Image 1 (tube, rainbow, N blue to C red):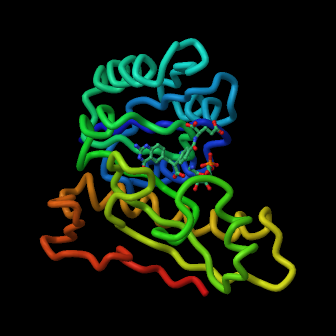
Image 2 (cartoon, rainbow, N blue to C red):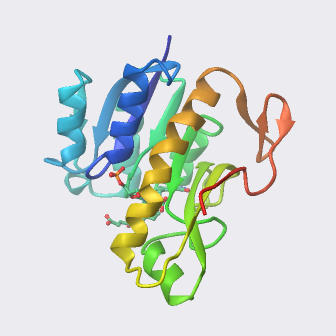
Length: 214
Ligand code: NHR
Ligand code: GAR
């Protein structure tokens, strides 16, 4: 069974979806460690509850992004993971770090990339008057939220939505598509090649596989 390492910064509901999938034999791999850059977050409790080593590497203890990323790389590589999974991880990673894990690191981003890279995506979609929004799983490359898309889930924006209600609708889909993408990767079905995704050897469209939840 392959190992994966999950990086978090907060509540860890996506981590929980991965843990649940592992318990139901839907993940095809073993979460061998969870690492948070913030101490005391709920995601760490979720890991402990599941008997998964829960580690903290507090970024505030480092002088530079380079020094933090170097320490993080060492901690991750102790577990020799086949895949690194960013699940609500909120620190921008250096180019060196992303190159070290190129083709073996996934992120979930709460927008229909290439729309709204960066932060505050739900409010930005509302402010733009978008009628649809969603989440994207992508391979991580040095450019922020720019790697090739694996899966994209689309949800409706509903009259009266605020950022919180919209985020909640998006997260329901996040918890479905992330275990799916991880299972594809760890079973060998999904690869990144020349900045494109291949599923069963066939290129995915630029959107990635689309889950239409409108
Ligand atoms: N790093 C690289 N190089 N490439 C990506 O695609 C990355 C990445 C690091 C994180 C997740 C990401 C997202 O999905 C991610 C993708 C944090 C920020 C951010 O601005 C932006 C994007 C993402 C995560 N972080 C602030 C920083 O200065 C801190 C914000 C905070 O701590 O609340 O690092 O959106
Ligand atoms: C998720 O909605 C994820 O898409 C988003 O943060 C939330 C984390 O929730 N990620 C980002 O915004 C990355 N910048 P969780 O901790 O409950 O999984």
